[in-house]
Image (cartoon, rainbow, N blue to C red; front, side, top):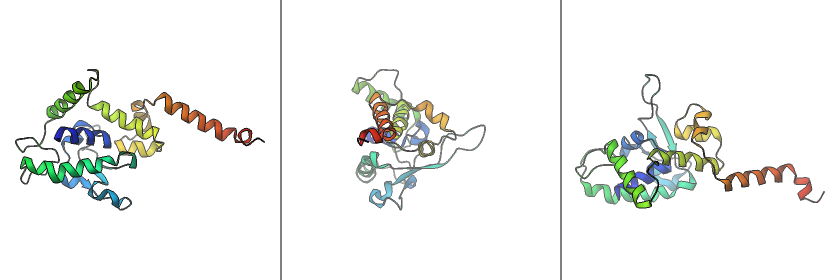
Length: 189
């Protein structure tokens, strides 16, 4: 259950390994514009990737409607499963069977097991979930800047590297542009 909730959280928020590992219970945030998500309106990333000797970058990653299934996943983990591991006062969101914070290797092991169970190629790693998240946000038509902010990229060009849109998306996009450009032909004028 823990590994399932962990991997779904990584994907639903586009998190890096250490960002997911370092999440604490207080990092689960309410969002006034989305009260239906309760305390799971977003996650506050305290340990984002640092650059050039600077401290870790912080950001809040909002729960997007297309990924709102994560609300029930996290609620189940936090209220029903995590307490069974007796973490005491440890604030870590994802804890081990020995009531400690998960290690980076533990996250990798969780993904490797899920990858093997799903029959995915060994080239896929945990970071692939982050790439999928970015691609899906692009395919859901979120603006470039929003996607960059969600994943903590200073430059849209960095986010673009992560994107690998599907042929279906490209065809939908082309059809939409053609419809907009040639509305007069479509309307019989």
